[in-house]
Length: 148
Image: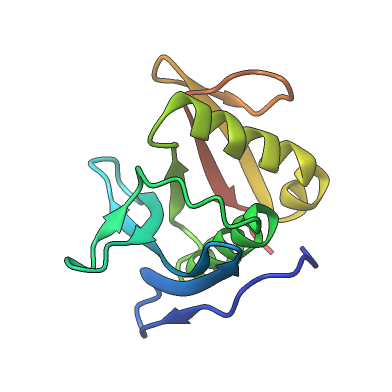
């Protein structure tokens, strides 16, 4: 996807990413982390503000920094980087609230044709995984990198 995004910082393992959101609320440090789940080769995507005291992800903060498109594009760039390094791993993502999950769905839908070029995309409802379709409120999402 050719969208404006922030520069990502990461380590060799490409399981943790950091970037800085810039807008009316100032410079806000963001984190994206991929961690294993109890399902083989499925990794959870965690995203949020970097807590200034603990350095951990705070996914409850509402930043309202006026750059949600750029932030989403940056998170998507981290998914590309992670699945480039680990092409067999799938990524599971859900918002910390239903409204955030809905915002993620709207962002995915807006760029659906681009996403589908590189990923198989699924929605999860009541622990059932189905091929992603527009205008359905999912509990979570699962992306699988297509083989080249």
